[in-house]
Image (tube, rainbow, N blue to C red; front, side, top):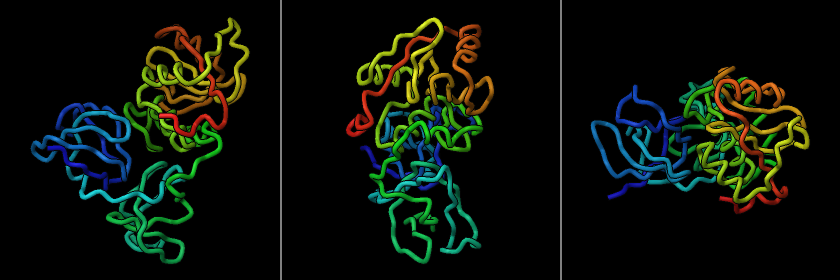
Length: 265
């Protein structure tokens, strides 16, 4: 029997095996839902209702019954406090796109049920969308690289893209290969010129196993293991390095319009 559980920790790792040192496949953000069907020694196995990722999650990071989210975190990260007071003890950090179910409001704080109190200025309505997903991604510059991560304290290339697109009202898969297939189906193909010309802000750039986004006609923003952080660098520099160590640039896709986010899944 599947049990729907909600993340009550700041973030919860989905791991390949029920062990703290098992490889992390991805993360669940606070408020996201996990459909659990197996329990073993403090771990539950199941699937993320956010993007379909399956694996094992520490049971202490999950709780039921589900609460209906009302707000999402719009800051890169924010504290959950024990009281509606900035001097009270912080309980956890929650990151962009984490979801809360709002309770009482006291002063500048909103009660996040089952969690604590969050500064209201770091929250947005659940359906509020950022106007520019690239601007969202740019807020993660210098964040550490973390395989499987999708929060400001550590994220990987596809985690960065997924989080930025979600904050802008869209939905896309978790892994870069799936994101490439998703973009190929929904976006316009941009021919790869020998001099890498003809690009614009918002173009998604794919290599086998890697993805980044153009911030302008020249520069690429990506979370990468070479710098071990999220950086902006010339696409020409990144393309030469990645081709030398791994594989050549494979595809570039462009969103058809600003309104194309709505309803994309």
